[in-house]
Image (cartoon, rainbow, N blue to C red; front, side, top):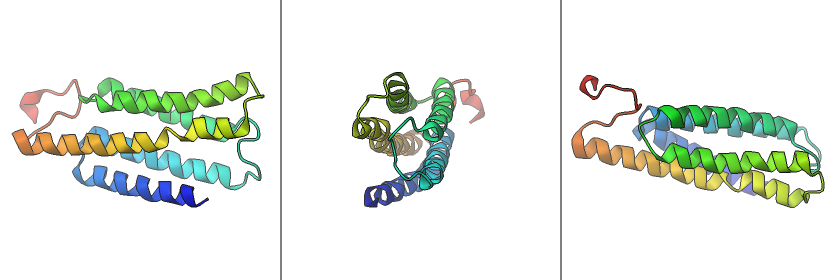
Length: 152
C-alpha cells in the first residue's frame, strides 16, 4: 500500500506543478488524472481482494479518463497528450484482456492496468516544462489547435 501513497504524492506534485505553470491542456489533464486517481482509490477501498476478477469500477473510471484524454488530444496544440492517451489506452486494454480471458493472472492484470500511470505523470511534467519554456522564449503558447494566434 506504500506504493499507492507514493504514487498519490507524485501525482499531486505533478498536478500542482501543471496547475501553476501549465496551459489549459496541462491543467485539464492534471485535473482529470487527479479525479481518476481519487475515484479509483474510492472504488478499490471496499474491495477485499483486488484484481481477482474484472475490476468493473476501475474499468469505468479508466474508460471515462480515456474519453477525456482523447478529447484533450484532439483539441490541444500539443503532442504529448497523444502519448498520454496511448499509454492510458494500454492500461485500459488490460481490462479488455481480463474480460475476454478470465484466466489472465491476477498480478499481470494489476500491473498492466497500473504501470502506465507513472510514465503518464512524467509526460504531464514534461509537457508542463515545455509549455513554460515556450512561454519564456516567445511570451505566448497556444493551448488549443483551433485557437486564433492573434487573440492571445
